[in-house]
Length: 162
Image 1 (cartoon, rainbow, N blue to C red):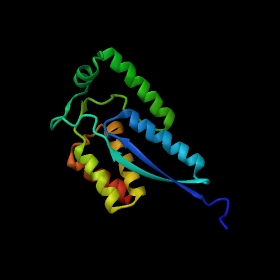
Image 2: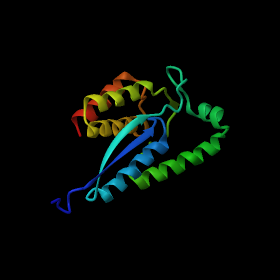
Image 3: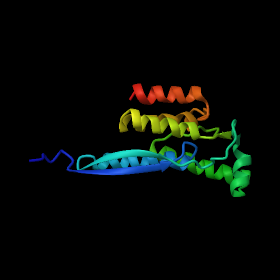
């Protein structure tokens, strides 16, 4: 007989996102809070799937204001308002966005390759920790997810310091 504290159902969730998407960082934090509320009844098997928002982004990235203006037609004032909303929503969810915001957007292909490797070679917990480390490196610390040094540091944090 299963005890009431043991989850009897496993729910697989594929979280499709990009490292460079602030709403994905907020969504992950919200998902983690929801999972914490149901963890006694349902075991969640979380997997991270890649979605490159900007697969054609060149090495070195692009100025964020220029990129958002080209992609969405938004003005710097509109972008500031959106960044303020993102920062507030992140704080509500327990995720810290830098006050200065991002100054560049980068190609995230290698970050997605690293996340895939973490799933193949490690555990779901390690992949989850790596995803969180990559999001924090970019949005909280202002580091480039294109930098192999940043990727190695995030892998070490996600792999060994969970």
